[in-house]
Length: 218
Image (cartoon, rainbow, N blue to C red; front, side, top):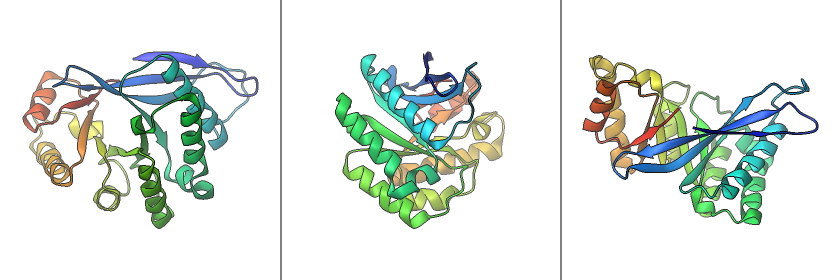
């Protein structure tokens, strides 16, 4: 995992971690998820939506400067996506064009654990983003509110299965059955699965038998 610091004159220092997503068949990283972690800063405060947006832009610029191969995954809450009819995402798309980042390498991640208050607008905006070449992912699938309904409505390009479902999947028959069912649904819908939080060889072997090739390295 790669970490760099990004600083502001007005807010606390933040670190963004570039967490790789590894394709076991290709033997290389094919994407990086950008996560923000608050550092020791000047104590100014809170991780508001505007601050989040500033650091998304900065992190994308860093990724371009580092010449990273593969996609860049950016996290947005459903509320941030629908805010002012997609303002934050469209701002990021404009910034990406300005710095020469290929929009086909941008993945917008939605955390399944977040409540969705305007599902209709969310679907409209996601489809609009896709027309620009952007891909969509559901993060922490299996841990939140929306579940299969969100999966059916969005039909994302990627689903990252929550680590709690994968822990002991090699010894827990119920978890294995659930993950197998998710895997089959995703296969039917053309969705790629990303396994998150795999800790043991036994878990890895069980997931490989299900055909899962993408692994989020934390």
